[in-house]
Image (cartoon, rainbow, N blue to C red; front, side, top):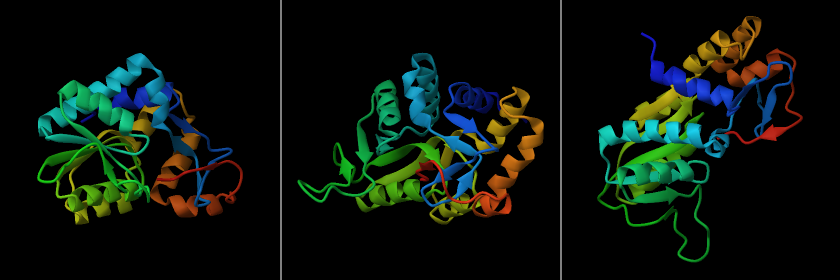
Length: 223
């Protein structure tokens, strides 16, 4: 069964170029891996109507869980966590990738989450590394992490495995499978290039070398 809400979010990502597709000159991540797709959900905060739609959708999902605290990952999900916390009337913290090394040297900023139920808000889940580190930080601070809620996931198997092994619930507003279908149906990508993009998703590391792309040109952080 098709999920209309997932399709609507996917269309927003494509229309506002938060997700871009380029098979001819793939993007290069910091690791050197080449990719025909790039997601930058920070772009969505620029557009009031779309920003509100995304924040409403996140809040609706999180409202069903009813956590005590909303936690956003630094830095790209801080704004989304703040928007959700405001809508739900919840306290909010944010989680650094690493502690500052000076001052109070905190990893979690905003308040004490010990003994509290927390939902972690992410803008994007790729390998799941940054999300899982955020979950770990919350657990070490004494919180109970009820779920990671994100705007978009690439649906990589290694990320799924990480969350399953860590017994961490995940909720995504939309995903790679939905986005690619919406992209094809709305002429964001030609059908003959669709297979190449889907192939990348199945084996992202091997895709570049297989198609003659080396790790060069514009480097983009992979997280």
